[in-house]
Length: 317
Image (cartoon, rainbow, N blue to C red):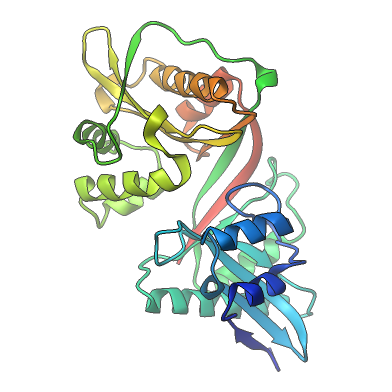
């Protein structure tokens, strides 16, 4: 790899200029599955994207590759790196590997313990892999990243019909992300979790501390907490919790069932309640994700009327 320089822009205007026209090979903005000028402008204005989270490789005056991150407005570091432009250079794998190494080094120097990449191939990517996928995975491996988990992204629209909700659960609102009842319910769902991120985090983190941190972060993509609920069965025993946000294009934030209540299709009921609530609040599209290995949650999405939209490959380094 010769005559390649890697830089970061110093202003939002410079960052926008560098990212406009980015091809975004399999990486996409977390807020939607497109890269548009409107999205980029809004993301920088809202501090979901920042100049210091953009890295560009240049060779002889031309752009040879781009990487950008996405995060919460109040956070100092991005949640993920999610925008990747491989460029057209013959050694583009080496260039992307160098970009990822530089980005990871800069983020770790800023205090980020784990750097995560999210790739968004289409559904069915294993049978028909996108052309850029092998190169991106090779670059990530060369930069020291490894696949943590593969996931599926599901979509509900009103055309699927508003799901019915049974009368077997009682849904109680919460006061906020720090509500002790909510925090306890969330922590309890960690036991026996099928979620790869949760299992990895619990190897080094206290469960109560992790629950508090993740619920506070969840407000940034599934808040406000108006629709968040803790659910109980007819006997008053805790069943689990569900989070999500109101609006036109919204997220299913979290669906969790405590260990002693699993096996009764409660995940379907929790998801149905949230989807119905979101539909009543104007949702035109609801998206949710789960790990490939989480078969109960995949079945819950399908039972409520969600369709598989795309996939996600999470790499950590």
